[in-house]
Amino acid sequence: MRSILPKLFLASAVVATAALATPLASAATQVNVPFSFTANGKTCPPGLYMIEHQSSTNIVTLATQDGERNFSWVVSPGEPAPTDTRVILSFDTDGQSHALRTVQFGHLITSRLDRKRGLEERPVRVGVGQ
Image 1 (cartoon, rainbow, N blue to C red):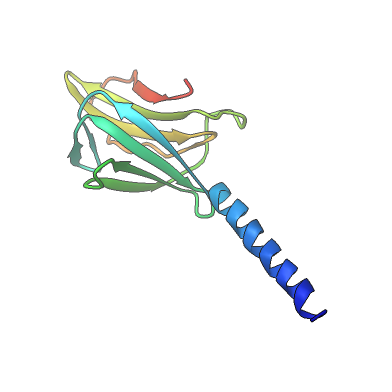
Image 2 (image 1 turned 60 degrees about the vertical axis):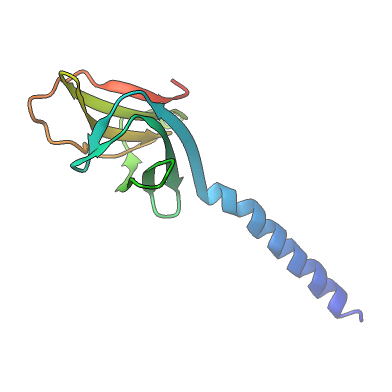
């Protein structure tokens, strides 16, 4: 009985550690985009989008609430400060059209996602913690 008890405590400690570590491996934020836009050549409707960062793979995912549109990109350190905690979607505009330019998740950011097609250089930003 003495040899089983320490193993039981060790097993429960491992499970508790795994449960605590799981939320740290992935972070998600909800953003409301008030206009339609294009991303990867697909039109996305206005509404709520979930942005999730997979820290283990440096992947950021953008998804609609209904799951009909899902996009994933690699993020890396960029212009944001290392202490930046904001989540920002930047868009280029052409009249009433918007094209997703970058996705920032904290201090990480995607490379430019849209093709520079004569769109305005001043991006429109939608995010959390601005």
